[in-house]
Image 1 (cartoon, rainbow, N blue to C red):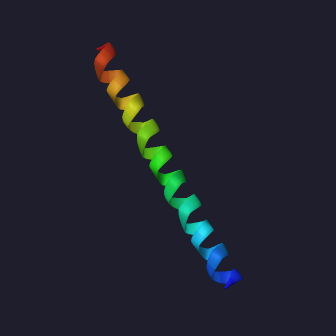
Image 2: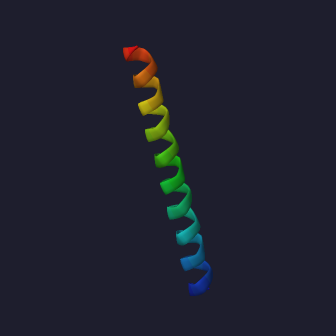
Length: 36
């Protein structure tokens, strides 16, 4: 039970980290094209 919970939390943290990275990359690219 506890191991499954920790695995779930690890997956959620990883997905949030990837989502934040994608949003940050998208914002940088959008700003780069918007400035040009």
